[in-house]
Image 1: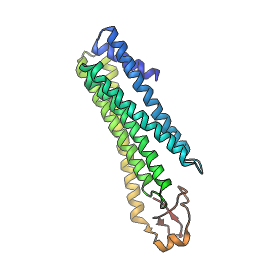
Image 2 (image 1 turned 90 degrees about the vertical axis):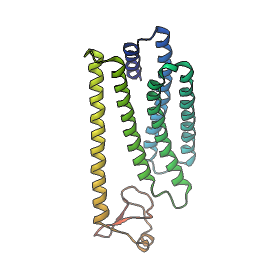
Image 3 (image 1 turned 60 degrees about the vertical axis):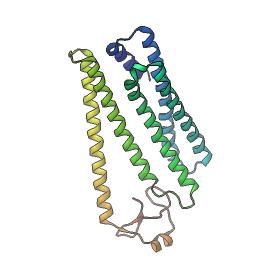
Length: 236
């Protein structure tokens, strides 16, 4: 959080060159947005912890989902306030707001899919796929927005090859590298999943009903499954 604030305040002062009262107001706005983002990230960590537990009451997910909805509403209200507080910096503040909103929506999607899985008698078979693509899509969009923000700062500051320019160029390089790595990871996962789907036969409804078992890998009920040559069944 401290590094986040220092980075934003230093670059706002170095590039936008506003008066001190505007720097203080903008710093407070960014700090509140960062505070809301911390709650979203904590909720994400909490979700990762809850999914490792054998049984969690639905009320636990309900409470955190309600908290996330409140956080998202606060994000929208705080962003709307920027139109009145900083009418000349809407583009910059929009690029600050969107990553926080997307992170919150991603975590909300995971909790909603978990609640749907618990409330449905048949479970939510596509839960893991929804969660995976929600996280992948959010990460790619956030990186793309971060890249746009750095490019905007470079355009506002101009290229003088000073310290600020060097730091911006290094950050642009880091974002591009992360985008490339995430693309490679997704490509490898897609190839592996395609191989498994084509290599192994689908279990028939009769086989699933006879087994009436949980997946040995994810420990969840199986409505669809792949069958190994040894006869064992597992989820994709």
